[in-house]
Image (cartoon, rainbow, N blue to C red):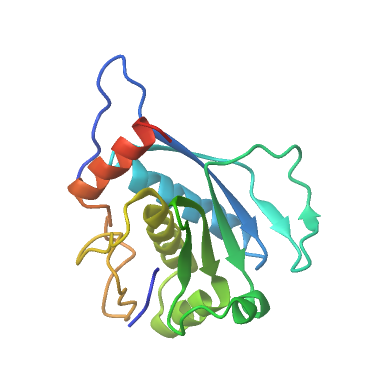
Length: 194
């Protein structure tokens, strides 16, 4: 759960890079350009650990669940990121400081991550951090939880447990990544029995 307060590994010759397919279900009407840039940033974070990401077309949905923008035939993603609006976040009732959450199945890896967009936007406005930077960090962090074993928080990098979005931190220029050990765990999961 994201809370507030490495170089890429080349794939062995003849071996395909581990990959993951993701889709965003957007209930918060995130600006399409910001969402695309956040997805590109997440792609770069995963590329630094040797993982290829494929993004299916985002689905823009009303809070009632109907398509606002048709996405055409639906392919099944490995992971789904659901961006919730304020009312949906309130109904879900996540911990007060959470800006994202990974849903885990009781018997194994989960497949759905949530972003609480209004909470995230409030923080970015207060701390003068771009929506793109913050959104990409939350998406990468929560999908990381879906690809890593429980207790995957670290003191540094994408999987840090508490993010400091204060104005003095220059998150815009940092190349935030997974730790080498986390990268290895993710590659093993995706290259194995996904």
